[in-house]
Length: 133
Image (cartoon, rainbow, N blue to C red; front, top):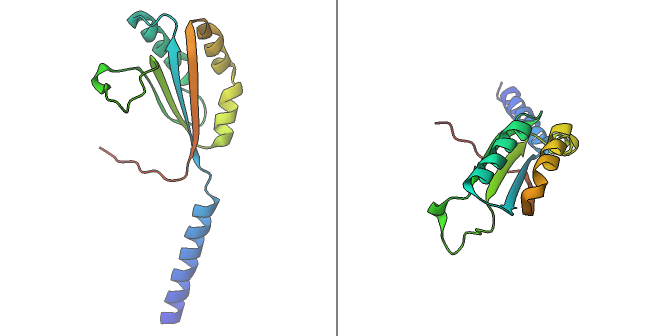
């Protein structure tokens, strides 16, 4: 009986390890926009465009867009931006599909004229934790 139980535990552990190894990492796509004309109205306009064109793509599991905050003026904070866009995709395939999507391209076309600089930071999340409220 003990051998049967031990074998079942060993099989369960092997299946869990194999599943973890086969899991594709989520992709973080963080974009920081520096605007040519960074009035509050133009910052809001870009945040609104992010929400309109970028929030609801297949494979997006997290979306946020917002403006730089005066509450974070510390020496370590990079403040050379006006609007931040944060997306997390379920995997790289979803990220790649988003990059070529007509809504993403339309967002770029309609807003790029006011961009002084755009910095993109993409990363693979192999370790993450989510807390429920």
